Length: 319
Image 1 (spheres, rainbow, N blue to C red):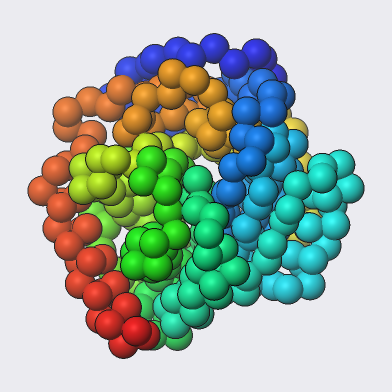
Image 2: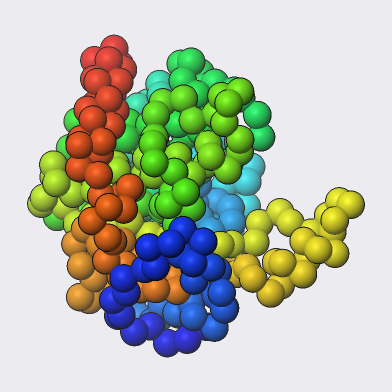
């Protein structure tokens, strides 16, 4: 990895070359976030901060002085993660149990956080957690699960934090997207159906994240909002019939979770990060073309309104 330099890139219009540019020589191109205590005293809420990229992000935030709130499903895994984080850092790390596929659990967790941090405000939210589909399934409330976890759950989290007055007025919100969104032109509440394959479902969810992030920046201009492509990260590959091929791909084309956390940490800590910018691990700040699906204003607005309508139902119910 190389030293961080704040560069600006306009990506290739061709989808194949766009994806190729994102993957090619990732290890050499992915920057290292400077290790400075510039989050000292800050309070950061991260979803899925107990595993993979999320754990490495939590470690990086703690190493730079932030106190961490981890929102996750597994108490056992999170306790192990907290021990690992606090081995090297003297910051405070808290755990609140919530499943992004269960709206009620998100709202209840936020209420618990509000009771604990009645004086202190959250300085930053990192919406890191996400899933890839391996078949059709639904959330507790009956929504298609990839939609529920990757987009809707984080919107509910944001709205619940607003309702409970948990966020600083100038809070930083960093959302983990992914350049795979470029292969999709739509994003609906039904990502995975019998007509959609895994790649299409996942790419739709990442396009939904892009639309959500851009709409959030427009609706709440007092916040700092950034979208991040962390890189194509090796997670869980290597076994099975094609293990040698997978290990070759992981070694030569993919990056580690620690490397994948660097772009998020850069957006969280470095000066001159552009509010509303989409930051990419190999391309820096990406200036999207006018016909890029992520900057479709009408679809983004419609998608935001859909999320707002759903959130309103459950926030009213849980008052």
